[in-house]
Length: 176
Image (cartoon, rainbow, N blue to C red; front, side, top):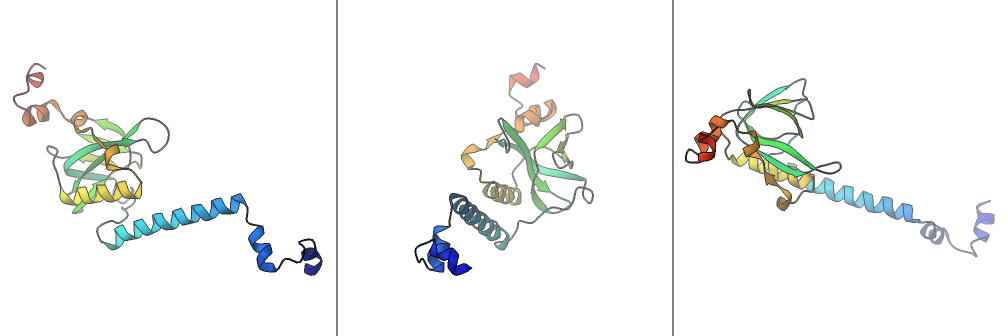
């Protein structure tokens, strides 16, 4: 039966047949597979160089206190607009951290809830931490976001007292 089918292909060999049956869909799948391998390789490099790992489940770790924190904005992962993310140092877990998208924020308690359902409490004033920065850069790489697409939204999350402390000479904060 195979021989009868092959007669319709003017004596083509099995290899010729396999080559000609490649369609645009097959090529698209091949491209997607290559992109996934490249992305997996990039993720593997980040994990191998040390320092990036998955987080505990929200039920195991429902709240994180971040110190040396800031809030950054990136283009929305789905659709138009932007997504805000916490970045800082988790003193209890002794690790840098990037949150999922911030969904709600309570300025009275300085606590935000993210898309995962985890709560992040911002402790003290904003600041810089090398571990947090390392994790943020890895997160940007994994999510294929350029540094040029990142902006700082920390000021939107500061209390009036923090603003006065950080910029005591700013007359804008004294008139409120």
